[in-house]
Length: 292
Image 1 (cartoon, rainbow, N blue to C red):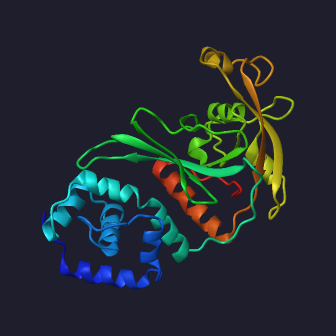
Image 2: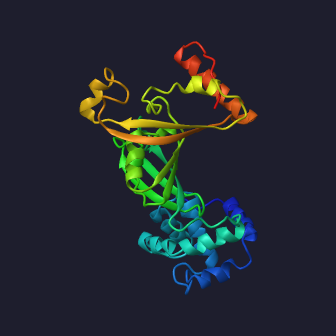
Image 3: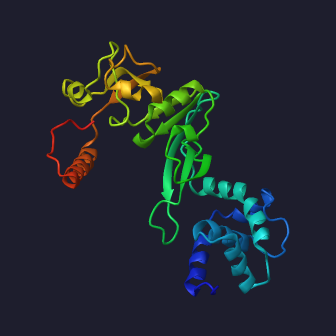
């Protein structure tokens, strides 16, 4: 391990000037720094936090950094000190980035956003594992964290919700089976609709042609549709193509509300560029459809 460059010391000193004046008192208040041993000052403890969280060094690398500069410290000792810093760092963030005061939600109600990411190790040619994360949209705290292998796809089934909670997800998690499971847990789901993996039906069981429905409504208005979708068992997948959409298929019926609205002008530009790129890559003719 090499010593940190000199400009890093200057950056750290400038960072200290941007902190709240009471950052040392907060460390004592949260009992993060009670006595000096291997890490002798509050500034050194904050440096350890930044090395681990900011520069993404491992516990062993952080320990090596302090060993080279002062005296020997183990990676396990670094882990314990950093684990205790969580409430202190959270208090500092609230001082530096005060959140706008929000109206309190009803008891038991919580809005959480969920998403997954594919992770590749250095030199890998494919996905090594996946990271599934949930975050509270009010407190901005992580609520769920799951690491799986590459064979576990993105799904709402990867998260456990309580009655009254609301899952906010992108179209990658818009699966009927996952939505059904969360409804059975007593939770609600707000999802960006994905027409390619979740067909919708009207009350009479006929398929919903979403493009035609949108064209029949004036622009600059919000549209709401009461729709249905179904979760079919695997044994009925072959019969699904031959049977009527609603009458002859076994499975669980899910009642949904589909809301559509026209994006702002900047959103329209982004969507049109994305559609044009997709059409070019797939060598298909562009089609005319409203952007909602």
